[in-house]
Image (cartoon, rainbow, N blue to C red):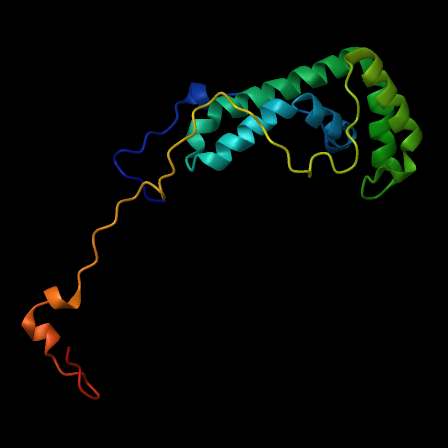
Length: 175
């Protein structure tokens, strides 16, 4: 990939972030609750990514979303570790595609524990796919495409005489 001299690469401190190190069954079991817990930060990050063409401008928002996910999973481990483990095991071993249709009992037990201890309720079906308006404190960025300035189009009357009177390859071309 080619970069210009003006391109500023992010330094290591900007890119270093603690990762969420849990397996697929645990993420699948807690994903909707995690999405609900970090909803505002996620919307802020996605809005930043949508509005700015440059992903370097959204590194801080991305770190905030990851930190929120880590905090949520640490709270979950502290309060509902056994319930999450049972539901994740059910998802992993009772369905080849981790579909929750066979694990509604363990899901309900886990949801009750999360609601009682953390106050987070599982979102209804379609919550994340519904259009929602997000209010932000960030200034709206300048659209680089809309901010372009175009040169005035040159008319054929201003073209040199040789070009205006040049004959076409097939037929005549005169203005």
